[in-house]
Amino acid sequence: MRRRLLLVLLSFSAAAVAAFAVPLLSATAAERTQRFVLTRTADLDRFAALAQQADTTGDSAALVDEVAAYVQLYGEPVVVVDARRQPVAQAGLTSADPALARVLDAALRNQPAPPVATVLPWSSGDVVFARPVGTGTRVAGAVVLRASVERAAADVTTRWLLILGGALAAAVVSILLVLAVTRWLLKPLAELAVGVRAVAAGERRAHVAGSSGPPEVRELSESFNRMSDAVTEAADQQRRLIADASHQLRNPMAALRLRMDTLSGQVKPEGLRAYTAGVAEIERLESLLDGLLALASAESAATEVAAGGREPELTDLGALAVDRAGFWQVPVPGTPTLPVLVRCPESDLAQVLDVLLDNAVKYGGAVRVSLGADRSAGVGWVEVHDDGPGLTAEELTLATSRFWRGRSGKPGTGLGLAIADQLARARQGVLALSSVDGFTARVTLPLEPTL
Image 1: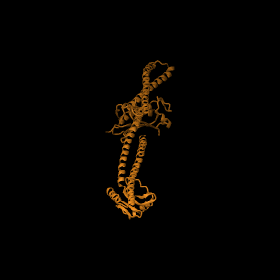
Image 2: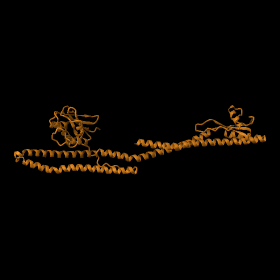
Image 3: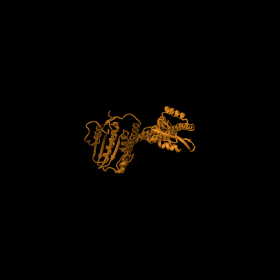
Image 4: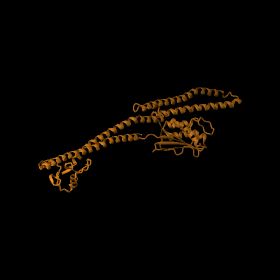
């Protein structure tokens, strides 16, 4: 957007400067050309008047002196001829010059002279001016003057340089103004974009300054800040609800468990089935409460990390994987000889591995655990695979949803993979699920930062 806006504004500024400079350049050259022509035409008129006076009186001394003085002063040659092309006065030019033949013929026939081309900075050479001597239809001779355009071209060059310098200064000012306007318009939008990404990443109460830019953008910034506060408050209320509900239910559940345990030796045979079902339901409720607390804790950890909390602990992925796999009696072949230190607290990673191993042992057949590291990508990974029935493509997309349970019908809360996914995300990791020849859960976590 910044490039497009700069392109539009700079193009408009360039067009405005060009619309101002080009006509001014043209007008300056035309004005200097007109002045060049008018001064030479006035000189021709004076020489024609003196020639007419000489023709009347027969005394050409004044004309000869005037021509000589003019050529000496201005360095532009002049020749005056009579009706028979005989020179009356000349200095620097001769009537016999072949280059003047056409000009003399036109002047003696009282024909108008062709217009002089506009003088430009690169113009050079001479311009020949001619004027008939006499009045009306009686032509008594002609005056021819050859003038150089170099001085006029130098004047045009000087004026063009001044105009172009002014145009350049105007262009620089326009560019600075465009940059300032663009920054004024886009800076608050860039801050809004940063704020949106922060909210998407889970940062709490991400705010933008909102003190610059147009009124509409400032109002949008204020609305964004209110929205960010509302989202944070809603998330806090949700977590508090889960945590409070779980904590408040623990005491009644513990009391109920105690009473059920007390009744275990007093249940009659006909009530044993109902008693066993009640104990199973209590165990299920306890597991569900533990899962809700773990999920709330994982979400809080994700928010804390996104908000710029403290750096997570480092855990040796290989050692912990061997330890938890040993607890679940699952082999871990090919353990790395060097430590694979990932940026995740040991308790969180152990909980993730327990969830994955529990699912694999519960729902699959043979279970395999593998792990490794990609140093170039800066990640370490651990993978738990079972050769059970696996999941369909649709089920894979739902597997990390809260309270979702597969079609196997085995007991569970439906929170395990949701907890593992939240814990992985909280440490900038990824939980990837696939189902090829069984079911595979792969956790990827960032490695220890290298200096």
